[in-house]
Amino acid sequence: MSEVNRKNRKNTNYEDFKAQLLQDSKVRQEYEALEPQFNLLRQIIARRNELNLSQTQLAKRVGTEQSAISRLESGYVNASVKTLYKVAKALGADLEIALKVK
Image 1: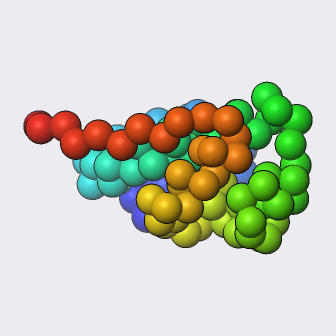
Image 2: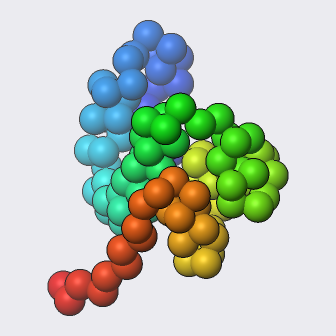
């Protein structure tokens, strides 16, 4: 972890803590690399909430268990493209995957 005083973390709000961590260029680089993944996860959660679906209800639509949806939404696992398509379909959405030249 970067030079964050662990004792002061309890008294620091999330945004301040995040800003402090992102001052480290290595942490910032990793954070930015993960942003597309977490953006998609936020969209999945938002759409599930828009439809007033529980994780269990979404899991039934996808054909999986609630724990799998929980792991997906937490970012704990890297879902396959096939799984992401199933989730999108269950949410009444399209999944777009694109390759962008840098």
